[in-house]
Length: 520
Ligand code: TEU
Image (spheres, rainbow, N blue to C red):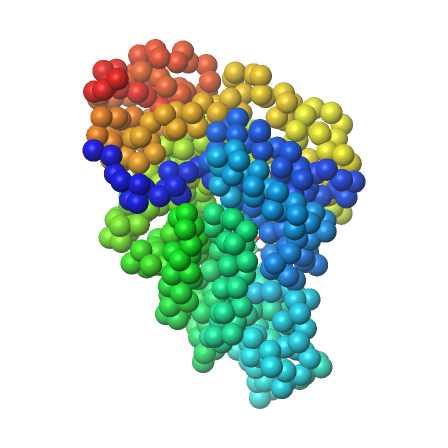
């Protein structure tokens, strides 16, 4: 019996596609992608078969952190377009039957945000307490030993004008908001309402576990004092703040949702931010962003995730790359592994998040020293998408970062008609997922398999699928029960519908249908 709609809201069944707008598609001579560019590629995304878009920040920003330093949460940076473009995009996404969620950066603003400009103007400013200020320590130094995210520098910067330090978990240009102040919470709720009223289906919440702060600002102990503070920050108050956000979202019609970036060390720590179905709808499983290409490691990652989330009745969210981390092909070392990884990502139980360009099998760009821009060294995975094999790869002018390797061959126009391409592989996987209730909603159980192979089955009432992934570079004999026939093969060469012959090629992954389905 199928679960009801409320047990399976759209975001549990959706495949999300992350767009980093600077690098997706450009329509002007600025060298930077824009909202009109996203609009122009919606049909490409429809044909790919994704269900929802996550759009990284497009708000006015001085771009010290390429948009994660927001100077106005309720507008569009002119480099990306206008409010009208944003509204048109939301409507066009919906017209095509897709959904759109946008980035919400609750923990810090840009230092150019009018709130911070006012806060730093004097110690008695009405907005002073919207940020976290402290007097220098007795020796004139920082108030505590916390470290910021990039460059192993203190998380405090001294403001000459007002004679105090302000806290920043990331760059000095990104002062942390003080969420213990109810006015800040109300203002950030206002941001959510602003975009919900304009029809967005939800939000990706940036480093959201970091919004609550220890009011005593205690030093980090010696063993961990060199780690960026945000990786350690856990405050009970954050859960209360998230419950308020959840009830705001639940007050809107249409199953609006929030997926949170919670960057903490253990799965249990991360999963606590689902609350009792009253905090985040989804939490990115960071372990899947760091697990190496090894059958046992992935088996453990899946088992630990399943165990941790089952206690809460929570639904997993998987990602293997994003705009902060190496692409799958770079991370796993070859196209064959990236193809197998795609098959795994799109068949695990939970909501998958694809990073733009993975469907083209892109590698990180090699960015020469003199073109490096990101303070966190993350330029490579942010290289622009090559749309065709021309000298500018479909961009109106040379983009802000170099293209990924082999863009003349590895591009959308070249791969689209080629049935063996990575793009065709992703299309086949997304089609298979859409066509199988077991893949979208089903339970998951491990199947015994030889060393080097991870095997599992997805099951829902009358539907099932078997998945085999060979993590090794050797061919492996792998008998599976029940027997199945090929629905998707990662190497793109096997005959669809043929009975599986029991032998997996090196780094090969297979999605098998039952030979004798229990229902038509
Ligand atoms: O990322 C937080 C975060 O976890 C990253 O800083 C990550 O640790 C690092 O990039 C690994 O190399 C979010 C955004 O995704 C990121 O782009 C922003 O820079 C950051 O928050 C600050 O807003």
